[in-house]
Amino acid sequence: MSAETPENPNQPPAPKKKGGASKNGSIGLLPLTNALKAAAKGDFSARAEVERLTGESAEVAALLNQVLDQVANRNTEFEARKQQTVQVVDQALDALIALVRQGELNRWTSSNTTDDPLLGPLLEGFGKVIETLRTFVREINEAALRLSSSANEVLAASTQHESSSTEQAAAIHETTATMEELKHASAQIAENAGAVARVAEETLESARSGRGAIGEFIQAMQQIRADSAAVADSIAKLSKRVERIGTVVEVIDEIADRSDLLALNAALEGSRAGEAGKGFSIVAAEMRRLAENVLDSTKEIKNLITEIREATAAAAGAADASKSATESGEKLGSAAASAVESILAGVQETSDAARVINLATQQQRTATEQVVASMAEIEDVTRQTTQASKQATGAAAELTQLAGRLAELIKRFKAD
Amino acid sequence: MTSTVDILVFEVAGVRFAADASQVVRIDRAVDEASVGAPLGMPAVGLRALVFRAGDGGLRRLDIDKVSGVKTVAIESLRRLPPPARVGHVPIGAWLDGDEAVLLVDLERMAGT
Image (tube, rainbow over all chains, first blue to last red; front, side, top):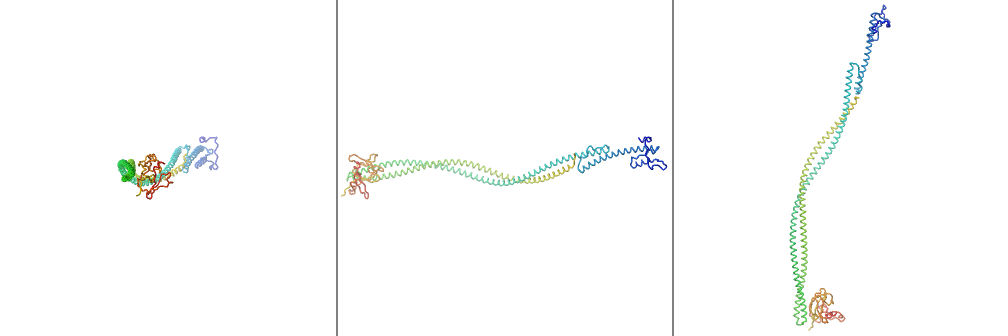
């Protein structure tokens, strides 16, 4: 405006510079020159002294001052814009430095904007990069935490598996040792079962022999009973005959006694007859002697009969006892036969069972040996499994350390 | 010439006695509760009985064990017991049979006792 009114009479005249006047007293274009020289040096605050000029020079000076005013204004705007740009760039640099040095991604916010059409997209791209990095850091942090947790779980599981494998290996080792002992025991059992089977077979043969012997015994008892019955019958007949003899002897004894009595009385009569009866007395005495002999004989016979009676009674008793004994023997033999039959059946079952046991123990021994071999293979596999578990545990531990390290590294980046 | 006499020798409870054979009517079997008693002791078996006639003419029985026989002996072999020994007693004397003395009894007197 001032340029458009360079000849405004109200405008105060420009101050005169010392020495600015030409030699002839005219200052010429010096105010213009001074203003241009200052502008050339970057000082856009200097102005041409319009009041010291006249005419076209004053008009040029006014236009120059207007131009310088505009330049100054533009320069002021430029400086302000420059300051703003520097500030934004400094903020971006600070954010980058904080990101690089401290891993901080939270320095850059969405409020970091600019009106600069050229710098705006750059800042917008920078913000997107930072936001993308934040997202990555968040996801990586979360993944690192999950990884660490999973690694810990894997380590725990691996440790547990290693412990279990170790215990399993120990248990399998003990089981293998036990199976080895069982194998020896099975072999011993099989040997004993074979011996039992042989003994059972021998016992069976003995029981069969015993059954035959008991049968023969029973037949012998039956024969003895029949013989005893015959003996008892003979004894009964003998007893009857002896009784008959006794009756006869009693008759003889009675006759002898009467004869003795008769002879005594005859002798008595002979003595009464005197000399005439002497011969009669002699005959009577002889008769009496005969009668006494008979009585003595009958007495002896009676004694014999008594002995025979006692003997026959004893024999009858013995026969009865023998009969009872043989009957008891038969009953005992029958009972023994039944018992032996039961024993035989039991021994037969025992023999069969012993054979089955023998066969089963043989199979058991074979199976046990196979189990022992399998247990050895299982023990070998278990040993390998234990070794692999240890390796897995080591790897899991290393993985846990790496996961922890990763989590620590990710923690350095502060996204929020 | 030596005088002889017939005596009947018998046993009661294992002891031998002798009596005048003429006093014995007969020899019989013993019958229960028919004897004059047991003046010579209780017979062991009592199989025989001497039947004799008492002073009243009746027959009496004396159960004995055994009759040894009728012996004809010499008078000299007989001995009388002294009167004090004979009073009230059956034995009247003894027959010496060798070294053994066999008491003589009077059956009639026995029946009177």
